[in-house]
Image 1 (cartoon, rainbow, N blue to C red):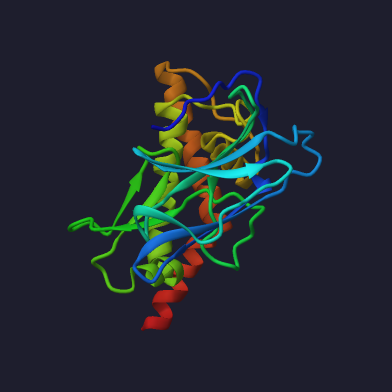
Image 2: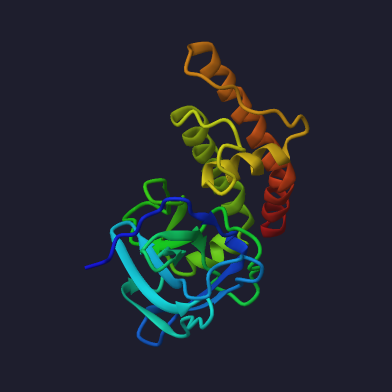
Length: 256
């Protein structure tokens, strides 16, 4: 049985302090290494450290020693998950009374040594059998992810390097995400929760726009129309930043 903790008065730990490296094992399962920077957090030396890996109904908790004597995982297996699963992590610091005094949540692991551990991944990619669909956006988990059909040979490389795929797929992915955030959830303030994925996506979209305006808030018919126009402007800014049209044209000209 997984013990439940009291969350009263907890301190938030920046995600950048938790460095998780996730990799496939020879048997195609997952394992991870963990690093945690606790400098200047002013935590009790005898407080216990726990790291949790979770995905939908999947949850594994690992005892990782104390603040004074951490024992962080190296080569820790995640039984029951295949190598393409999108798994997230959290760290909890728990005092002797079972109270969580510090926490970092929704941490996305690096899967490559080249990835910058200080940057938050906005759109993890997973691979699954999608039947006759090439891609699908998953908005039902703790973080949005792009599902790619693993029945297609080289789909990973196609998504990474094919200019036509990127031009046709990614603007629509961004549109669906912003529609979910702004219209379906009416989440329009990027400062509501700085670590929430919706706030991060809003800040990303606003940062691309020439006029860095917030989307309107509310559910009235006219406001919903204004939200739609705001999303259109955000997608236009995204396409401009990625030079979508130019890259698409150049790709087809070179193919001819």
